[in-house]
Image (tube, rainbow, N blue to C red):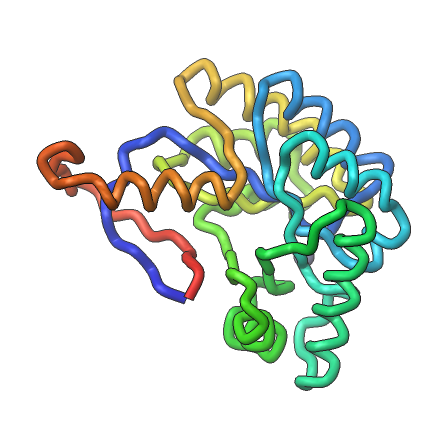
Amino acid sequence: MAHRLRYFPVKLLALTFDDGPDPRITPTILKALQAFHAHATFFVLGRNARRFPNLVRAEAEAGHCVGSHSYSHPAYTNSRQAIQELDATQRAIADAAGAPPTLFRPPYGITRGQLAVTARRKGYAVITWTISSADTRPISPEQIAKNVIYTPNPGDIVLMHDGAGHRATAAAVPLILKALSARGWRFVTVPELLQAWAEWEAQPRNVRGSSSTRNRTIAHPR
Ligand code: ZN
């Protein structure tokens, strides 16, 4: 994974949701995203994609990106298990959404484990995050929202969860979308963000400006 250290001026954020889909949480989030014309990225678990294929299909049909988060969320695997985890999830997503995933988020953000190594070898872009909403802690929707609203920089990738039980996250999403939309932010998928970033970097310096007042890091394929 390479880290880019450069100021990116476009007020784009990539909200990402791990561990879903879940029939009580994911539809609420999809509704909020739709209301604000926002796109997001769902890093689904293969086992949940198998149980709830309609939700994976709904994510894809609404223009969101569906990525892989492994099949059963192991921290560590051997190489044979890693291949099984990735391939079974790929099939589950392809069956539900009509296209295989190209992004992988390793469970627990472990980027040097066998799963992430194998995913890179298979051609996935391994994506972590630059802001955590801290929504795996027992905190209120308002606090989750505050963790995101308070801190964003252009190009941030925000870690959230739509697995079972994440009601506070589902309630936080409209708060985040409302507050940041009013301040001119737009919400895009991870591929849309990387595309916008690449296009900006490809511009000549005089168009882009030379401002480097802030350094940003972004998880980037390879
Ligand atoms: Zn996870």
